[in-house]
Image (cartoon, rainbow, N blue to C red):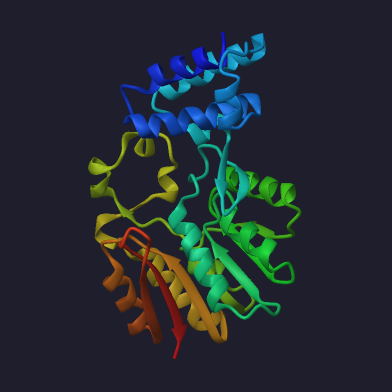
Amino acid sequence: MTLLQAKEELLQCLAPLYHNREAEQIVHMVLEHITGMNRTDRTINKQRALSSKQVHQVTLYGNELASGKPVQYVLGEAWFAGLRFMVNEHTLIPRPETEELIEWVKAAAIPEPQSVLDIGTGSGCIPVTLKKVFPLWRVQSIDLSIGALQIAEENAKQHGTEIIFSQIDFLNENNWSGFAQFDIIISNPPYIKISESNVMAKHVLNHEPHLALFVPDDDALIFYKKIALFGKTHLKRKGMVFLEINQLLGTEVCTVFEKTGYKTTLRKDLNENDRMVMAQLN
């Protein structure tokens, strides 16, 4: 099998599921992972034969992709803020909107040593990225999922970042007494209403962890309410909360924090969707 034949085989696997442009991008990711060659080199050497191991990988990955499994889970990796992160089905796939949240933190935060709490760490992409930029910061990350924490710990190790990880059910207020105070709280919590699942992409719904995605329809703001309350006793003076949000609930999230004594700023992402909130105690 040549590189060109591998590309054509993978495109055939993806054709029923994705538009041409997205399928091409996925194939690019797969072939670069398998061969270590960039797109230009693969084009120049499109008649180069693959090894038997590489042919096996093409077949294996093609079958998994054809089942609807996201390419990041197939390859076991995703890129975020220029860094490679291990991912699996215990973790959400890091997304560009979360990179925008990180950029907001970097722009707003004082670069001197800060204490940071990351709530719902998943793959660890948020704390690892912050720690790479601000190595003197003290960063603590929590998650309910042991599987996610194992991946986050491995990512922190791979990137040479020292982060404190803990398995904690944040929604249980009895677990809050052991926390210190923080300069920054950051979170991309579950925020999708269960009723919204019927309009979600199947590859997300069928493969990404529901624990990290969904909240009850009758209490869709539960995590924001708890974070606002937690911050009242666990934020230092002039401390800030940075949040990713459901694009349909921007005003409602701001109201939760304003009623609890914060001033808020709502920000849109690059797609002009309400996506982020920054809250600071008055």
